[in-house]
Length: 335
Image (cartoon, rainbow, N blue to C red; front, side, top):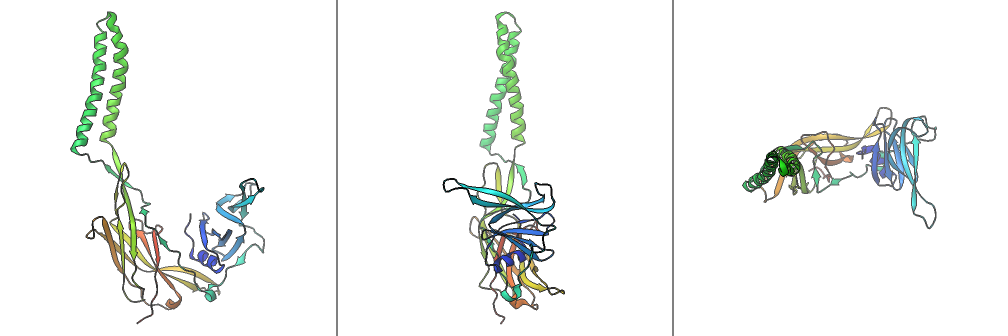
C-alpha cells in the first residue's frame, strides 16, 4: 500500500469520507484511495479528481485486458446475485488517459474549509524493513557436548559401514556384510559431512525491532520553543533462529503541513521538515525498557497559525523510508 499524498487525504476529508487503503501509479502521477465505499482517484500533476462509486481500488496497471495502453486503475465492485447465493466480485478497469472532458473534476479548495486532521500512525510493534544482518550462533558448553555426541554417533555408523565392507572381503557367506555395510557407509558418511557443514556454518538473523512503544509528546507545541520527545519501548522476544535488538538510533522529524498558494491561483498541500534530530538509545531505564530522547525546535514563519504540526519517526539507517510512527502535535498560543 502506498502512503497517501497529503492532498489526497485532504480531498477525502473535505468530501466527508475517511481515506482507506491507497495505491500509487508507477510514475507517481495518480493515486487512488478507498473512501466510504467509493474510489477516489487523484491526478497530482493536473490537480484534478474523479470519484468512482461502489468500487474498491486494487492497483494500477499499464494496460487494460482489451489491449488499450496507458495508466489504468483496476477496481473491484461487489454485487449480490440472489438472496440465496453469496456475494461475488466484479473486476473493472478505469483508463485514466484520453478521458472525456467531464471525467475529471477540480480539487476542492481547502483554504475555506481548513486542513484535514493528520493521519496518525501510533503502532506499538515495529520491525525494520532494512535488510537484516546475520551472525554465527553462539553455543554453550552443553550445546557443544550435544554436538560432539551427535557427531560421534554419525561417525560410528560410518566407520561401522567401512568395517562391514572389510568383513565382506573374506569371501563366502561374509559377502552378505556388503549388503549392510555399503548402504550404511554411504548414508552415514554423507550425513556426517552434511551435519558438520550445516551446524558449523549455522547463522541466525539479527532482527531490529521494538514493541510496546509509547511516545511522549508533552502537553503541546509552541513555535520557536524547544520540544522534548521521548520514546519508550521494549525489545520483543526472539523467535527460533533469530536474535532481536533495538536500533541504536532513530531519526525524528518535526513536520509542518500547510496550504501553499501557487502563482497561477491554485493550491498545494505540502509537508515541510522544520527540524530533525537523532535520538540515541539509552538503556539506563528499567530492565527491558529502552529510551530514545531528543529535542526539536521550529523557527517562526508566516502562515504558522493555520498550519498543522506533527512528528515522524524513521529508521536512522534509512531516513528516507516511510515513518513507523506519525503523531500529531497540539499547537499552543505563543507566550
